[in-house]
Amino acid sequence: MIKKKEVEKLAELSRIEISYAEKETLTKEIESILAYISEIQKVSSDILASDGQLLTNVMREDKDPHESGVFTDVLLEAMPKEEKGFLKVKKILNQE
Image (cartoon, rainbow, N blue to C red):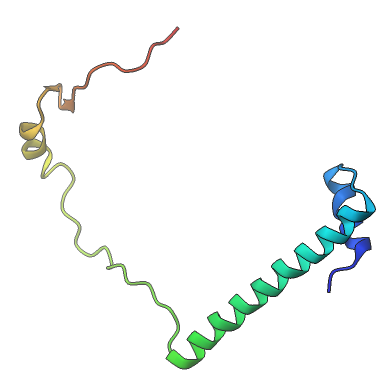
C-alpha cells in the first residue's frame, strides 16, 4: 500500500504543491493503479505457466542474403523518375 509520505515525496520531486485532499485522492488513485498492474502481472504469469513455453523470436535467421545491388536496376526501372542511380522526388523542404 502506498503511503501519504510517498505521495508527498513524489510531489516534492515533481516540484508541485498538493493539498491534503489531493494527497488523499492521489494516494487512492496510485493504489488503484498499482493493484491493476498487479492483476496484469498475475494474468501474464498464468498464461506463461499454462502454456508451458517461453516466448521465442519468430523472425527468420539472415542466411545467405542476396548480394548488394542485385535488385537495384529492377527497382529503378519501376520508379517514375531516376537520376544517377537514385529515386528523384519533388523538393518538399525549404532551407530558409
